[in-house]
Image (cartoon, rainbow, N blue to C red; front, side, top):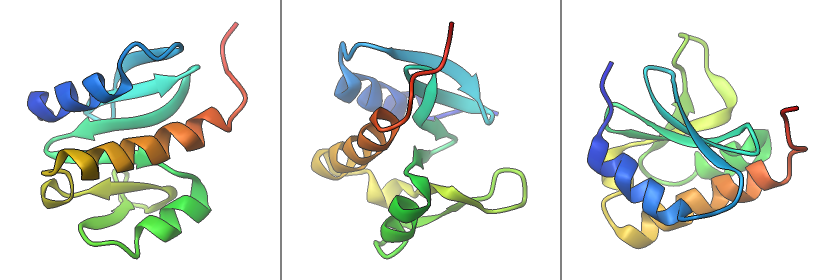
Length: 111
């Protein structure tokens, strides 16, 4: 499965040189991890966000969002944002900021 390279580049530039960011192919797309915790990613033309159950519920009240259902079963802590919700740079920045805030609240994984 392919992913939108332009959207991935935009997310990558927003994450900048933030310490602890790595990239990994997951869910048939590209994921960005913060201290080995999934933060956000791109699958096809969709932005994927890990926001926790509370953050995901809040995000679902906004346009262009839906629960991530990659496995056929909705994942209560993750949402997809459709392309219309990421067209504007400030909108994308806001979504990525939320995912970074959630991932930053998790204990680092690894070693």
